[in-house]
Image (cartoon, rainbow, N blue to C red; front, side):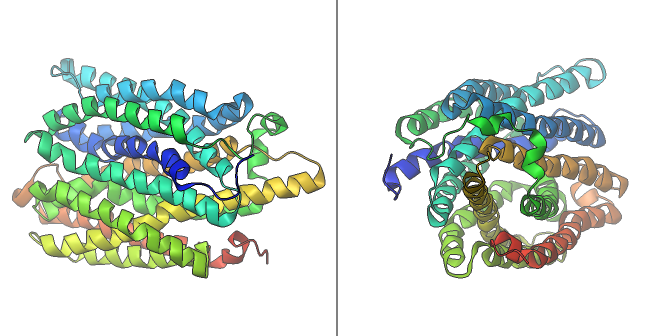
Length: 435
């Protein structure tokens, strides 16, 4: 049995794998729509529909993967199985064939198959990696430190993934192909660091909890409410993530600044993370999370007011919304880890099993990915319906650019307000003080 205080080196070793997983997520969720709509030439609405269906199917299997992972119980082995699939799948996804086939059917098939391969590998790895982190921490402060360490590495991975394309090649499609190839050795090095130095779980997986029905995950009303807040707020974050490159290129007309804006966003998220951890320790995770939501809402509204060429103002918006991202990444999973610890304690006292962490994070990932699916499936067709055309730039119809700006900024702000109100209503539930 290890000491109660987790050594920093072990905490950092655990966090290392967060780097390539986040590195993969940026092109997977941000660059793929533009790559296949602009460079490959598939219709924007079709790309949105494919992303909706594949992401939704991916989300549906996550609770099952989580329960299956709890049953097998070996987090490290399952992650090791998933990572080669993730590496090969992403490299193929970012290197679509030059000849798309008749009517683009070859490119469409390539998109669907490589998305499926990448999503399954990513899901299996992420569920077990996050469940492992929830099983490491032995007290609330240690759990938020573990989560923060993981997310600091994750933000580092996203920053590098955001900056590299502009450095690798001037052509976006070529740069993303190189990015996919580079991802494979990065994944291998980080995985070795985590497997060699991360601590074992304080709570073993694979016990009688793995035989509980999946519905047991949703029996606790606190978990259901936390998921609802996550779902509503996550949609508000996923819509801008889907549209940000289009907004920068055609509303701001600053396509050459895309990499810089993304770097500012994620660097500020990482820099703000220690501050959110300190704020959470002093005032509670829920209040810190609410403060980040207020900051995000203000950023969204400001973005809608920008005109073409407003690079400095958008850079400040990226800094503010990126700071809010730090809290969104670290605090909700830490709240879930606290909830799981409460459930395990209550289960031991009552002499009954609680569902495993893998099942909970499978449900958590379902909601997160459903948000991304819904964002792509709704936002892309909506902007197309509003008259926006990809790559139109300064020749675009004003109503199309207005629709893009409104859906990118105002719609997420309105949704985030709903999430904030829900979090305020149930704040005592998440703080472990039922009303």
